[in-house]
Image 1 (cartoon, protein in one colour):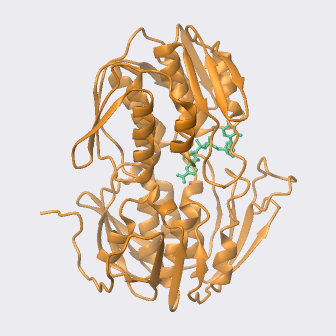
Image 2: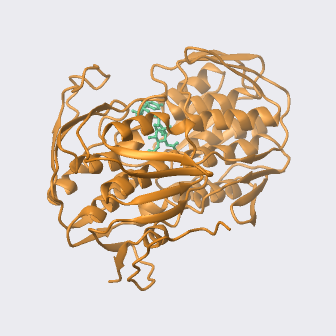
Image 3: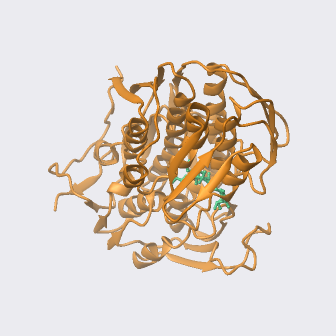
Length: 452
Ligand code: EPU
């Protein structure tokens, strides 16, 4: 009964063309059903976890996105095999591993943050990990000091050069580690490195995002012993070996929120099949506060605009706070809300520069270095434009814009959908890193995409 899309209304005006540019004609109410699959930020780490065992592992609900292709390439580069056995199901067989060619890995990795997470599995399997230095979206400096410090605490030696990292340890040992900020990546690093370490590791101030809990579920299926305590304390009892697993990845809550914003901003109605309520609770509350409405039913969540949109004061934060990756499409939503909204970005110091292009489209967004909204964050008095005031409602108009990073890129799509006239967005391959078949999904809910 359920095909990939269940189209209720579609005005499709396009010819298929694969280019790095999309031209969208805005102003349509978008209505229909969209299916969202597994979370980019969970599946990629779960793929790395598979390398901790020599046995095959099966991962289901895998989205067809660029980042999954990149991590598959990386796994092949270290000797693992990745095969798609049916739609959205992959089997990873990591029977024999070897060091990657770091130049090759560097090229493949491009903008990815994942290579650093290969450290734990490669150390356990080969006692050495040769890794490239990291890329990642241009949203701030994004250092890896917490990762390297944690590995050193567990007994690893780290040699850093401009292009590569060489990490060595005959056997990692359990350690007491406290993160100065609950970093998602560093928490994953500790989990992937400590499950096979000798002894107990206690991680304090850990991140507890749903994607991390999903990774912990996978590690537990593999034979690991991990306690998630109160107050962000995770305790890992090292074991001698791990085995393969079979896991269905949790739904991508960033993509779900993006489609919710599309529904509200265009005054349409979108049923997101696969959307899960619990990991979305904070978003759902915030969405409702500004006038969005939703119904949880039949394997997903339906989103629409329940009343005229109104302004809000908001802060991004680690889980269970409002995700930094929900911020960008939400900013576009707030350009359509009555009043002045304030957003204080507390996770990344430089995640508002994308708003310049929105202002070019007619939005009224001012950026501030101050911690607006109540909380003092670690970016206070450090000259970072990390607060925004969005005055609305503003009538957006089409423009020619370039995607700077993944989430900003999708927010430009949201802006284009509500703008009068045509918006030309260049650099959509960056959006394809994390949004599966987004052009197809847009067309299926009635978007007019004009071929160039
Ligand atoms: N940080 C450090 N040192 C470190 C690690 C992090 O200072 O060693 C800082 C970062 O600079 C940042 C903050 O800590 O200011 C949080 O970074 P975190 O480590 O939590 O982020 P990440 O693991 O690099 C993941 C997601 C991001 C998401 C963040 C926060 C992946 C591949 N990426 O990044 O997702 O924004 O957690 O939830 O999981 C995206 O999907 O577009 C994206 C950027």
